Image 1 (cartoon, rainbow, N blue to C red):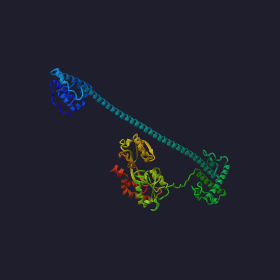
Image 2: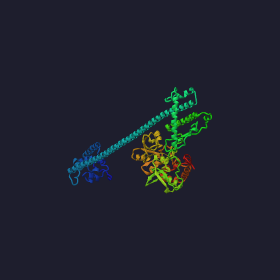
Image 3: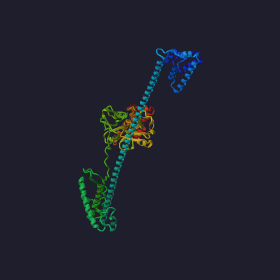
Image 4: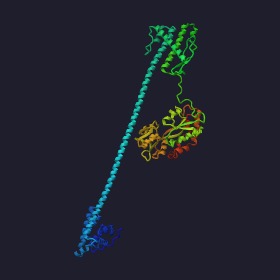
Length: 623
């Protein structure tokens, strides 16, 4: 720190003015620094600044050049200093004295000329060093700018690559949807053609049946002695039939009918023999009206049908004393009607009896009637927190619940088998008897109620959104507009997402594939049930579920699926076991397995608990 300057000691006012000017130029610079910068001692610099000695002209120029860098200011101060120095020299008592006073003592250990040359050399070196320093700083700034440009170019290249990849993925998905739609349309056109062909065949068969009925009526009228004017309307050919006998020659037509009836008799005898039925006693059945039921026969040949005929207690033909010709005619009329029915059933493939129940709907007790049998439970393996394959076993809330229900139903842990199921396998596995029950995010729907029996719900859930951690651009459902959003195929969340939020949909087979796409930055978000998404935040710490990012709508109710033929007693046992679990251990298991949901909704997480009203209303059976 520079010491305070003393009083001015110049012999004249001009010398003091020069000293004041020099103090202003060297303000803040001590004599030690001045001695180091210029080849003059500290004592000389003290005399220069108190006015007792005049500063030399060349030193004055060096001081101004050293401490004033701005060119205009430097030139003004240099002119001012030279003017003050000349005035101080003129004001001296004599020119000789002035020169003597102004002449400094020789610099220590070097001559004036050498000192001045060294001063100029040092000044040049300092300026060179400063220039080099500025050049280096400029080069470093250029390098940083070049690195920044390279990083921006790489970022642009990456963004272009991601854009092209996303475009290709969207194009491929759209092409797949177009191809699928074309395939659906092709199949629909094929089914339509088949339906039209079946309708045409049915129409032709109907015309043939009407012709057979007309011919049978004609036979009845002719053999009963009806008049010609009564017969004519009956034998008029129907449109499209074309094969009725002509009206002008009735006798040949009757002979043809008799031949056909004889053929039908032989066919009936063969049919009865195939079915191992007793031979018909045609002499005892003069007039029989067939009112039987056509059904599939139990014979080895599935195409054989049988006719269960009921006798009509109409014995007028036997009571009126008519001969064997009338009895034979009645017998032939009966066989004609039977033949017509057989022809219709065989050609159209119609069965008026009940078909056997489809596979999986027969009565089957999933509890197998005892408590020592094995209980097979279908579970999911792709929902962290709920049910996930981990460390060689399946763990989660649904697994804990299944084991507790099995224990309540009388099965020990060694008698319970867990079977992993995909999303599209769960309902079919129950129907086909592959598992006894399913606890794997089975949503309660009216369509599913027609396939399986449902007990529950055991969990409520709501729509949610999964995003990368720290992504503040998505906090509500409306923020999904214009973004790539992934959801599992056939999810109930798709419709509202498309219609309400104008997002671009990317479908994957299950939620696990959507999470993988989010981690690869192929999509912006994943939409699914909140409990499922919170489970993934427990598994991966780079994801989060914004609590406000929901549409507020209940996404679904998870229930237990049982076979459709489960007895009511077993279904009620499962219901009572689930009811006891919900009222007891449910909250503890939920907090243990899905703690992220409890943390996100510390005061309202009970909304995920099913109510007793839900269970009584949604279950296929109650206690």
